[in-house]
Length: 453
Image (cartoon, rainbow, N blue to C red; front, side):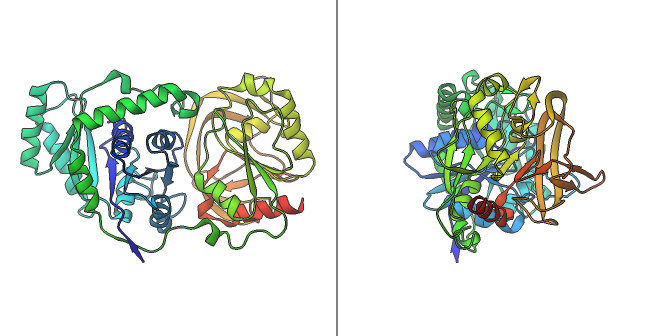
């Protein structure tokens, strides 16, 4: 089987060049033309896909060759792009920057090659003119398997500046597909872990995406970009299918699996809830900031990542829900928590009472913990059997003390091996963000435990 969804990869020489503005604006501009646009993000990032979803009306999906393996990049892309007219893939960091010490693995270039997709390079031209040609030539010629099909010049100062840039790039032989001036209203606020998520600034985010779309529509050749997208090579193989990889649903009545959401818990991959549903769960979203009770009949709880530190006061003030979560865990019902979920289950966060499921305290830290992790399950849990190997990602400015329980969740391999996380009763809590598509048995195992607990 093969598919030829038109597609582009939006990349840059480095972070901060304007990839998110261009990618999100391009998605929204294509959608405004009546196209069904499939949005994707290279790497583990959760925040950019929220803006992509706002631009397209479809779930933003991640393509991470480290977390899921190179073999799943194509199938996961095809899964997200089903029924779409065009796909836009936002890259991560610089075009050739991948997992540390792993060569090209998980880089934007790696994913572009796996997708057989042309690359559009977004260049911050604010402090250069003729030198832009040398920069673009270097990126375009570094790897002959990566096809740089054009350039979008960002932060161009004037008409004269644009003229100089275009003259230089004409000599480099790479077409200019867009020129963007600096527009203040396109800027989106950031804080300690990147952009502020859409869920926290809904109205302002809508305005920002509209501004991005207007800027891209005015400054870019949308017809030429769509034509470049149609030049992508066909992809062989089938789309990833949650029902297929989850095997048959767990027998019996569908257990209710409550999934935390709302502004405090925005970090989740779309495939997780799809896998839970395919395994036979009745997935019930709820907002720990507003809901004072868990969804009726809750048999299991999934709490992903996000920013509980920003909402610590509100989460702490919702005492009825904190008590309900503690009671559910005490009853032996399965609970899976990642990063923000781990903090929420602690005794306290920055001195404010949390759920108290774990005898551990959490606090904000000046130190950023960031990077991919290779992990193995220390013992049996509601998510994995002992010895199960998974790859994950850490991204936080908090510290939990102690960092692991009597039964740790994971052993982290590498130059500095360690154990981390907590497994107690039917609770699995860890800093590690994982992508369940890489190990779909995780979802089925969790639903089975919900059915029998």
